[in-house]
Image 1 (cartoon, rainbow, N blue to C red):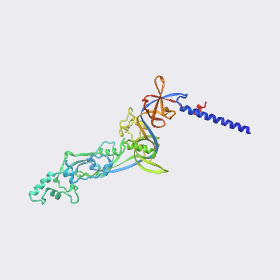
Image 2 (spheres, rainbow, N blue to C red):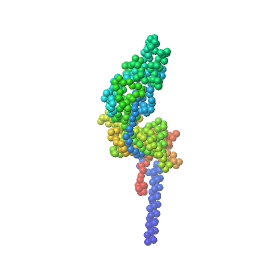
Image 3 (cartoon, helix red, strand yellow):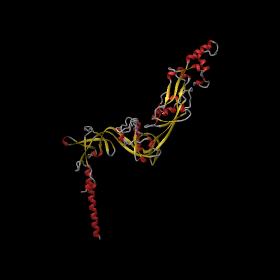
Image 4 (tube, rainbow, N blue to C red):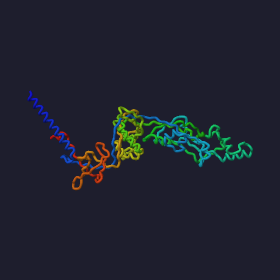
Amino acid sequence: MTQHKTRKRILTTVLALLLVSALVVTVIYLSDPGSEGRVEWASVAYGTLYSNISATGVVYEMSRGSEVPLAAYVYGIENMEEVSERGYEVNWATILFSEQPQPIAYRVSAVNESLSERAMSYRTDLPAIELVTLVPVYFDFAALVAAYEAQQAAGETEAETLLAFIFTVLLNEQTGNIEHEHIPSEFLREDDEAAFTVTTNYPKTLLEQAVPLAGGQAYQLSKLTYREGDMLTLGSTLFSLSFRYLTTLFTISEYDYADINARMNQGETVYAAVAVNALGGRKLIAEVLSVQKTENMSGVSYYTLQAGLVFANLEGLSEENPYGDFTYYDPSLDQDAVRALGVGLKDNLTQQELVHNYSITLTIQKSVIRNTLIVPTKCIFYDDNKRPYLLLQGEDNKEKRVFINITLSTGKDAAVQPLEGYQLEEGDLAKYIENRSLISSLF
């Protein structure tokens, strides 16, 4: 019995030594570029390399609305935040001391009657329709001077100066703001040649600045309650705009957020590929927009980020051109950039296919290096001092060693720069040894 146990221990020891020897041989083989094995060559590429992280989230349907004053249109304001934050008024100081004549009001000369007293649902991809036509109305200072002079000559006014006449006849006692309804019609002058028509192109412009658009965005217009002949001021509500749009929230750690935040602070746009689980993993693009929440757990901070969903523009698709277009949103999102994100060019998701609370998986571009040389990481070897280098195919099939600096690695590929005194170009062939398995190394 003892002899049997001794033989068993000896056999176990021998097998263990064989296994350790095999591991040592394998490690030496994998670290030595000169080891026997099948030699392969990979081409050095030039382009953009991304380092990605993954996160999970859900689709949210967000609601937003704002009253849009007439002044926003007159002054060409296209940002929703600025529209809602600014106040507008016209006072006598503006009218009397402005170098150029300023309207004090705008007369409604035509209005889309179907819109009055009810909300209108519309879409940005439909043809523009007219909402209201407005005629600028100016204070006729010349007529006021003529009236003052006529009344003074006839002894019909107690005002000793023109300024006193203005205060007596025109100004509201409480404020310097113009109350156009208190101004006699003979002191008003309309400029029919300067009339303008507001169409649905304006709410479309506001939406394009507020949310990613493609294939049409639904919205509602309300508070178009004025009638022909009404007088609107700059502070009057032109319309109330409300709409819903799709976005997503996801959470990442402070270590991943640091790189994303640094890129955004430098003015870069950070994109993610969004895979919708309920739709078989079909993908679209999202732009990381802002931080919504921060919390700390076990000494690590986690950031909840909002990303706006970007849908491909599907106008003009044909058998010859089956690809959706994202360049409407960002010219840099050409087909190569979309492929780099991992988003399909042909299988385009539409906004109508997404539903509130769908679960999604995001692949976010954490780090990016553009205009760089890229090699597979399996082509990178290290010398005794742990300095990375490539073995390039030289003349007469002779190998030459090129030391490099690795600026970004994804595990599969690496962005590299040749060290001073070495040369590396796109199209160079870099050597690698096809890996053998542990089992094959044993025999």
